[in-house]
Amino acid sequence: MYTCKETIELLTTADIRPLTLREKLGVKMHTMLCKICNAYNKQVKIIKRALQKHEISDVEAQQAVKNISKTLSANSEFLH
Ligand SMILES: [Zn+2]
Image 1 (cartoon, rainbow, N blue to C red):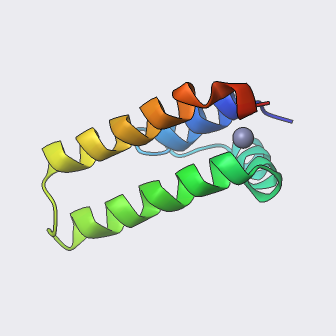
Image 2: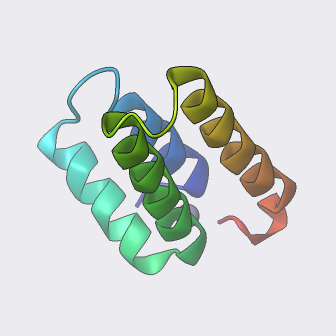
């Protein structure tokens, strides 16, 4: 089972390279059980969708993802 930190890293990595089946399953399992990572995953998906529709720019999207990550680290006492 991945930790929150590993899960979030993998969710970010998914933009750079395709995840292996093992990684995908691990991330899926974790996000199903962890509210924080589930919320993170959803936010990132919303941002990506907005990016694809050109509702927001690359820079805005990167900033938004950074903000979410920052919020998560600030709440790291909830992370497992
Ligand atoms: Zn988590």
